[in-house]
Image 1: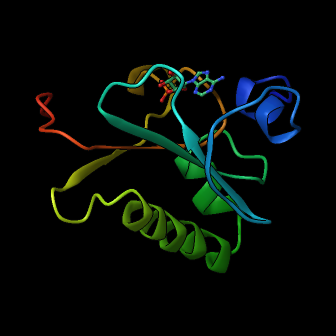
Image 2 (image 1 turned 90 degrees about the vertical axis):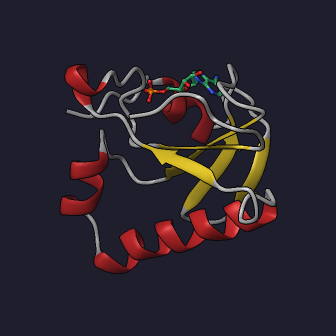
Length: 116
Ligand code: AMP
């Protein structure tokens, strides 16, 4: 069940500030407060969804596809296409998810030394 008090819900309600990279009516991309790479941006949809599965299964195909189109746009804004990047999403306890609002991590700007 979605927790309205999670930190990204507060960011979406503008109760907590963030450094915005891109925002539109459906999505927000902002800098991670504790970056694990030179560039570390989080991307979230504005609809309530706990994780990847909930986002994809409970929402319109068009919203899901738009999200990934916007992520690619942000990757371009950040200039990550030349050097490369990682996209990661964590889900649940086993995935090590800390904030229960679906998000992707976009990481780059340097050689990333952690491998899966
Ligand atoms: P995850 O472990 O996938 O749930 O990732 C949560 C991410 O949110 C972590 O990388 C945190 O550094 C980041 N984070 C937590 N609070 C904030 C905040 N107020 N603004 C930006 N990023 C945050």
